Amino acid sequence: MTKKIEAIIREEKLEDVMKALRDLGIMGLNVTEVRGHGRQGGVKLSGRVGTYQIDLLPKLQLNIVLSDHNVEKTLQTIRDVACTGATGDGIIFLYPVEDVIRIRTGERGHDALIYKDDIDERRDKKK
Image 1: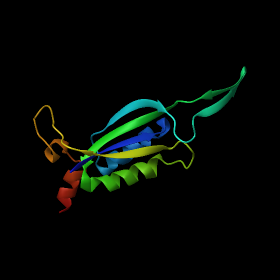
Image 2: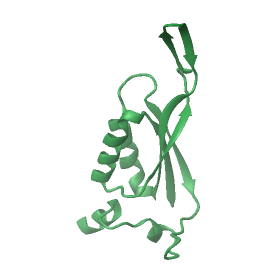
Image 3: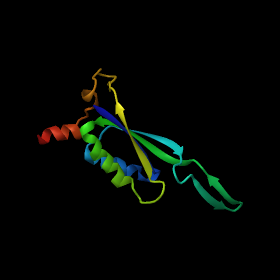
Image 4: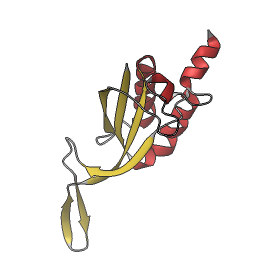
């Protein structure tokens, strides 16, 4: 089985999270700029003309599809690196993925997720 991790993180944590994921062996991911708010409901800012509310804050969304046996390490890595301890650190969603197909080769499932020196290849070398 395969899972999709969708992590919403602070913009300033992107490079740290990406480095930690590369170090772990996660090679494939997508990053999208998003805007939203969670429990904090936005922020109130003060300026020369008074205070104003910004409801939709800029965040980044990481999408990673990987094998089940890599999920917990990846989730923990994202949490450890993206956490500042302040409101607005983000959230992670985990979804089941029915199938994966690499367009260029037609590979399906686990074979479509393999990258040179990725987390699975490193795991296989240790065995």
